[in-house]
Image (tube, rainbow, N blue to C red; front, top):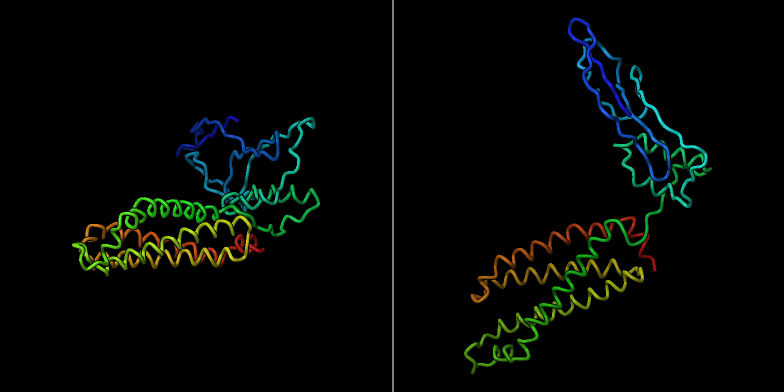
Length: 272
């Protein structure tokens, strides 16, 4: 729709200040309907003015304000989508930013004989829950790669046993114990991640507890790895990477552990 706006000069003469197209506000659940916000203000206009659009956000004006708009209603032959869950649509709308759209959807819900203020139960794998699951899968893949390419050759080639032999020129039993500890911890983390993913699939109550345990064990292993870089000279060049790994594990735990404990979606989903 075309909108031509006039302003006024200091001597009171009208002048055209803008000539623009206004885009329609549409919704996929209201096929054929078009809403146009043309003008509005929260207080009465004064003169002279430059014709700029006054700031306003609410659909209905306060006392002394005004709104001017128009809308298009489709013919009766236009069919509306079936099985539309308007409560889910209502949940997705930012009420502070689009209060008029919230009121519109609530009116549609009320016209259907339902309660527009009813609470929608949030459950199922979705929303923010997707992010820790994706992180869990990536971590499991990285651990598996580490075990296969680094840890396994140490045992197959006998390097780990040489560290405990006093006759070996690489004799260092403390370093050997560290490798065994780190390897055992990574194996535990790998299988724990597999179990957690299975519990997620079955929506078990144990999912939350074991995923929290996964984050805590990951932090513990990352911390031990970082401290080892300051104790063993051979690991000195890995100090920066170890610190980054520790930082990532702490950040992940500090974000997702509180989420798992407080999320309504998590509480409603993992009930078996």
